[in-house]
Length: 481
Image (tube, rainbow, N blue to C red; front, side):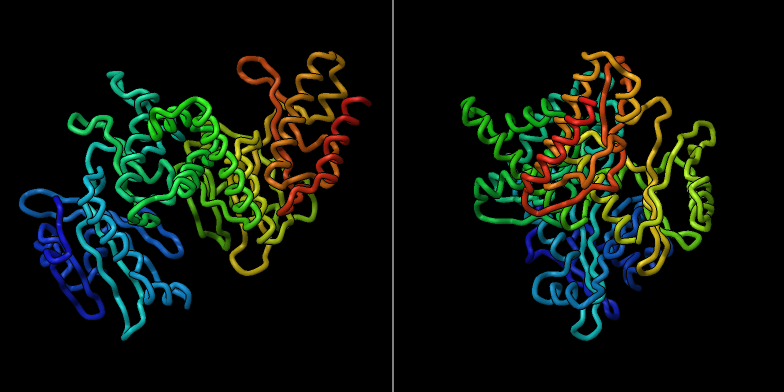
């Protein structure tokens, strides 16, 4: 339903000012007339909470049925956030007006309903964005990370999914809609009878409406898709690119794909150097917590209380005797052996977490950290919880036990490949000992190598050829002993 600016209705209550579509006006008068907090307290369910954004699901009875809406609450704390809200539109208002423009451009998306601000005199305190919850849809990221089945009828395959995704992004760019955060978690896939296979844009926080989008800007946006890790495979990305740029000659297509990969490398290097990885995994696989004086992230499949007991024990211990821990799943049946990379200041542990995820998103085989735990407060200790695979050997142990030349050469090639990828991201080891790599047999009984100990990584902004050569020589020396 298209709504122009001149059709929007204005409402106010106390410090709050609202803009709403005519369709949403009756809902506003019934539930929002005494302020947004009353609607949250009586009908809201907390979905996600962060430092600057909180997401609620509102279930509002209306005309013999229950309507569901998502409410985003942006907190404008701090001088920079309030200054941006004054110079530009507050985030909630930005999403609302952007959503209306996207609907007018006939792009499949959610229905924007209302937006509001709360300010004290001329200072913005909060902004709000209300959108209608769509039915019979699933987050596109679930199919990549969660391993969900696409469709029992076989009408939706991974191939058609990537083609539809690429076609939607092409349509967005042709109509001047630039999504700077082009990641699957910002899109929905229809799984019902009426919308089966349709892809919808759902997040406008980093969307910009422009007359035309330059080629370089498009490739920079597409590099985000190549950055989300091995869950979106190379064939999937190429199908996406074929749908996004159909009819390209083979040589031009290869050049475009290569340029996008270069943009991806620069993007990951930038994230690693600034220790910030806003990865798509945390939304699906991880949960944040603040409990017993600790805070951080942990994998949802595992029990938080047992983890905190373990961290508390090693935190007060002066030895490494309790460094290994059998962490139980949430159902209490299966366990995973884990180790805590400990005794780090909080900032270093957060940087290590960001580094490991950054390398994983850069398609480097590295162990996936299961939790980041730090004490609440400034400059206190932090812990990164890393799983231990009992049947895996460190590279040093493998070389001591294995004399077969073919097996050693197979592992050597994999280690060299990993090191060269690390060097692309401006990352190298200080002193290689062989304990940084683990070797194990995969389900197909082939030898596979992955990084395990990232503590000794060193990060540089510019490639250091001398240090890179030193890494390669150290590995060659390990294999020739």
